[in-house]
Image (cartoon, rainbow, N blue to C red; front, side):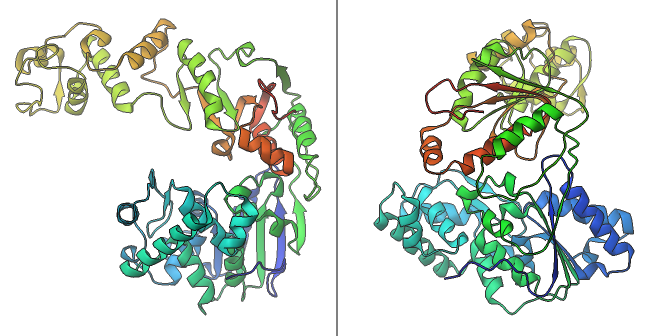
Length: 510
């Protein structure tokens, strides 16, 4: 079993860039990459290791554009998992896939819930199963499974957890495949240390103990290491992130002090939150020149959302349910956790129907969307449902009535689309009542968990301060993590922060 690393990275000079919210730490890191390339450091001796594929890709694309490079010239601009995958010379068939997880669940009688695509080459997937998640979490924290079980006070039996561990290991061995954590462990145990001059590490506060071990391995031969992050924004400890490693890391520290996001009053409020954290790196930073606004509210409905751009956040998903119901009743178009409340297909069909009845042409794909919401002999003549005779790219209303069995031409969409559910119809009607065209614009209102909104920002933010039972219990034992979570939430706001006081006992008081 792996043990935690000390806070020293080999013989390299370590530069730690601490970036409070909105200070541009990733931009700063990318500028340093450009400086290295400009002074002649070979691109294949520079590594940019990011926590997400998005960040790694952004860095690679920026370097390629600025210095007229091809992707193959920058082999080490990757996530840690992609780095391991590439260095080990693995193929996709050697890594656990979605089908592999589904087969495992069926074989061992385990409900895996949703199996989600990850972000890297090689097929990274996550499963919604507590037992498998806890087995993997112990590995990410470099802990023995029994130790993790005892420390975490899990609400599952030890025997069930041990059985899950043995089952997944048995399955992988039989199939001769690796999971994502296997790749990291295998790379650490290998003798593969790339010849690198400079290594950049982004979002270091989110790295787990096992990933820190890999960072140390990658940096063994480097002369210069840049580590960028913010311990105050470390909100993934529950998923294994080891923020203490960043806090204890030896090196020359630089704090980016000017936020280009948060106004002065929002900065002051957020500093009051993070100041409660006991184990952190003290740092000061400045908000923008604007004063901004911080307001406290007794109830969510006392905040006038109107038609402005809003980010509305809560600690957990179910705490968003009530406010989502209110927003729907008001006829406000929105997204929740980056998903529309109704299908994009229905929005497309509704928009196409309006264009069709206004005398415009629509494409065949749009016609098919429309027909999917109509029943035979009600909206469409029998035999025309599948549009088997359609062979053109564009259609007018009369074309569909004359040649393709359309019966509902000229009728409102909510009459013609008889297969649309009542709830969706009522919601779209309420939007139309407000004279808003939901078919042409992106929603102005975004609902999200605080974790889901990390990295985002908005002019106006509404923050619900209620806690789930589990979060409340965790805060009573150690408040540092919850303070970091609400600090991240408050600093999503650019100009206005509206804080809704707890509606039930035991909320987070700001």
